[in-house]
Length: 368
Image 1 (spheres, rainbow, N blue to C red):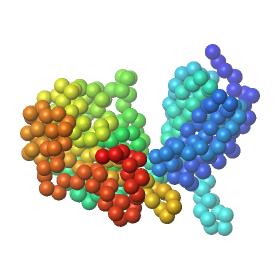
Image 2: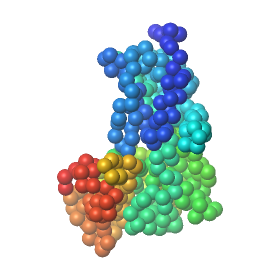
Image 3: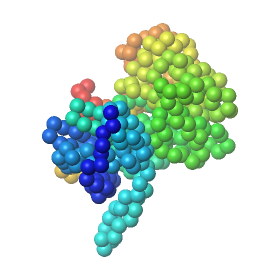
Image 4: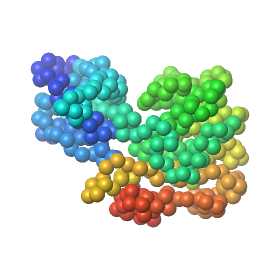
């Protein structure tokens, strides 16, 4: 059924305002959420949602409608989810005599119907809140050194793990940019769902996991095109995982992400997918797991810093994998190499340095 939207007020000034405000406040996402008596606009700042404004139903619908127009979506389809991209320019005050500069934004928009109306989520560019260079991510020195060493390897699989919003994609992009800069003359290809940021020197392919160009099809094709480095989005199924492992065993470097809470859980997931234990122990270079903690600034929090743990496939860990050890035994094997530092040990150092506090550590890592 087509829904006429002509009666809605012009929401362009309102949309321009909250896009500019979200950019100024370094938000990662904007939520336009329908509720029983209207709409709420929320900004995700440093990982947490904050309510920015509330509107009546008509104004909220106008905002969603305006966003859909900007993303070239079908405004008359209010019964199906839709996704699109928005390219816009936002004025940002620079503090010089009231002058304003314009920031060009590449936004991603997702809309979905709910009981109270269309819900819209806008994803802002990651570089607004996260640096692009590997050296600027504030990773612990041992983790940074491990990533730089991986960039110089001839083969092997590196998995970057953590929950949603833990900075995995930012780390992968920074690693790819490091390879472009420091590993001249190599072919780098990424398979992404979706492409979140353009990287000069990397061939980026947008896959559709449930469409005609799936990860499996794209990966099989790209392996015939002489790449040295492949970056994958999240590995969700056994076929993609098996292809990635085989590629890592045949002279390719692979970087992938996984929604796993720890390196041990990532390895166990591969085992549960039915991958051969000797394949895992030989193909995997290492597993990086990370979280983001809010920085403590006087009486407030502003900005975030990663806590990260890199686990190389040491000999004790390889033997545990071959023995099909459970997660607890894998965790024990990981701590054997000298110099191993856990997430909590990394977080404790940040607390000691006054960068964050114990309350934030407990919020993100829980009791341990």
